[in-house]
Amino acid sequence: MKDNGHIPGIGTRLAQLGRTSEAHYGFVNTPVYRGSTVLFKSLDDLENNRARYTYGTAGSPTIESLESAWTALTGAAGTALSPSGLGAVALALLSALKHGDHLLMPDNVYQPTRELCGGMLARFGVETTYYDPLLGAGLERLFRPNTSTIFLESPGSQTFEVQDVPAITALARERGLTTIIDNTWATPLFFRAHEHGCDLAVEAGTKYLGGHSDLLLGLVSATARLLPALRRTYRNLAMLPGAEDCYLALRGMRTLHIRVKEAERRGLELAEWLRGQPEVRTVLHPAFPSCPGHEFWRRDFTGSTGVFSFILQPGFTRAGLAAMLDQLTLFGMGYSWGGFESLLIPFDCRAYRTATAWNPDGFVLRIQVGLEDVQDLKADLRAGFERLVRAGA
Ligand SMILES: *Cc1c(COP(=O)(O)O)cnc(C)c1O
Image (cartoon, rainbow, N blue to C red):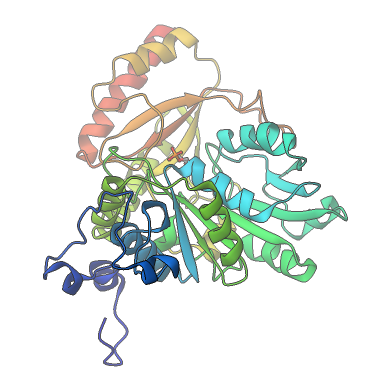
């Protein structure tokens, strides 16, 4: 972008980031470069690896457009991509950890991340301890001489506890530990992970960046200290996303600010409405005081997105829940979120939490508020609640 001293706003930046039109005959968007082989001009160039691009796994204009856009958006020193959000979590962890290390993980972490720790990382000699996500500086008492890395996810998957990120990253910096945050829920628009002290920040681009439930992608942004390790791990694994998915992510980025602000507005409206329904006991939305860690959300975040949970009153039956969910007309039942369509799924994390007790005493549902008209979503839910009550009576 041309520098005339004026600081551009987020919409302007999202419209400009990662574009290299002059290299593509003036076409606005970086094209989809598919390729393995890149041809060198001479023996001399080949022997000296002298070329802008050298091989498919070593980078392409499409991949570099997305990487450079994300680096600028996050304020990081650099970015590496992955074919999925979970892949990006793995890439970050493998960049930070080595055999013999001790890792701290929040108890409300995305469940497949937990499986990665208990499976592959354990096999490679990394020991994981789960911690109460509401511990801030109190985390220090779990430190061991070989603790090297603290993972954060804020708000946490499903239950939405918000963490005291600055307290944890300050502690980590003091001890020379590495911090990784899964920032998927907030996106860099609503939480500035690196400015809050995190070394590596993971985003499942599958969610809001893609925004249309039609792609899988992960991104890891790094501060200067961690960037060499991140790039080395990325190079070693050579697990890169396809060019089409990078293209779609760049396309999604142009409207990300509009979509997350709209997700926020709709999310808050529906959360407020749900709070007033007699079948609902508690709404776990980071912007509501009823959400654990809400004070950290208020202090550190600049917005909320359209995914949150709510706990039903106790006493409803499984048959009632099935009657409610099976006949919803707008809300779909399925994993992931961040697309244009609304979703509603029940969850039960009692079985795998180890550091904290989670006894909600009623069914718990996670909602993704899509772009359908809110009055229609309310009508769909209201009819669902009536089926729930009828079947339970
Ligand atoms: C969805 C999600 C992921 C994984 O993303 P995929 O692209 O589905 O692998 C990781 N972390 C969080 C917090 C997520 O919500």
